[in-house]
Image (cartoon, rainbow, N blue to C red; front, side, top):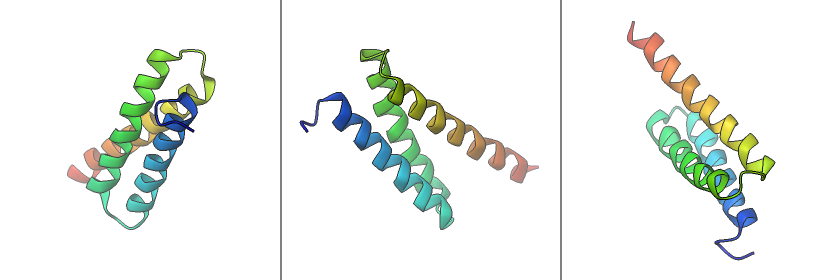
Length: 79
C-alpha cells in the first residue's frame, strides 16, 4: 500500500496505538500518551478526509477513550 492511502494510514495509526498499549503495559505512561496522540492525529485527519471510513472512526473512538482513561487516572493519582 502507498503511504497516503487510507488503509496504509489506518495501519499506521493502529501501529501507534499498539505501541501506546505496550508502553502503557510497562509503565511508560508519557511514551504511551505520545503514541496515542500520534494515533489520534492520524485518525482525526483520516476521518476528516474520509468520513464514511467506519474503521477509522471506530479506532479514533478507541484512542480517544484510552487518552481519557489515562487523564482520569492521572487526576485520581494527583488527589
